[in-house]
Image (cartoon, rainbow, N blue to C red; front, side, top):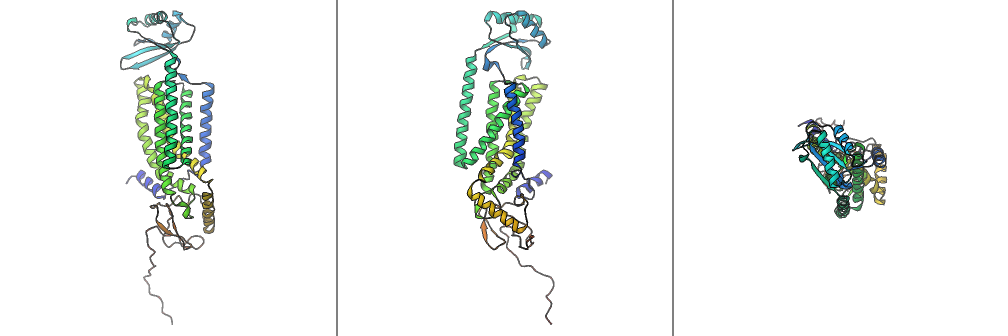
Length: 396
């Protein structure tokens, strides 16, 4: 068995545990700093919307040698507008070309710009592609994207509230908002153009992030079933155990998803020059990475904070803290470093009571705790009397 498999099995059984939920302030601060940077970039720099959203004229001229600066100078010599154009180099299946994006031009001005750029680049003007897009099309795309996003969020709230509970729906929405703002902020920071492909990528990563969050929440639900019937673990302890149990799965899924997207972003866009793919690839790459982070470090801690406000969970925490104080165990992750058993199993309490819980603690059978109580046996294991290989001494 590989070390990664052993590590994953140790996390699932509770032999290894990271106090993720207990350190929620660290994750909140880290996310807050990143969100402030992204929101600041949006306020200062804004987004670089593509011609599909702003409207304008796009002229593409196939050329293998012409530089961006040469095309920009040729556009200025055409003297059709005082606006500064956006000139880029594009490589695709049809080869290399110079792309000039500017405000909406008339057919006459568009032809004049194409002729000027083609002459400066020693290209054939008949091969030039001229496309004019009105702003109404971009407004329609934006409206449909926002409508789809609202419908998606409403459907998610209804589903999570029915399948789980409304607190999980709120925690999932917090994580989704976290992912959206960071992804959009990264677009502003790097200056990538926002195109319809970027919107498609954004909607795609919302589904991915939600999928990962639901997997963790399903394990939380399993671990917290009948939790209030005992006094071994708080809700935060059980939620932290669930995060640890799904940690390796989340990491593996993210790596598998990021590898092809990274190839699309770095190899396809920069090495092969397929620039039309970089906006979609960036949205997917950032969204998958941030979505994995939020499902582990944001969604579950937010859920635990909401649940710990319930009177039943407050009473459970008081019992757990009192029990740990009596045993001299003040470690917040002690309960998380214990293997899980099936819901509904019974374990003998040190005080003689029998409690039913989704997750029970285990230790060395027959060992004594700091207070002298016998540690509870693993569920399903009978207490066996100690046998001695020596005969008892006879009384004289």
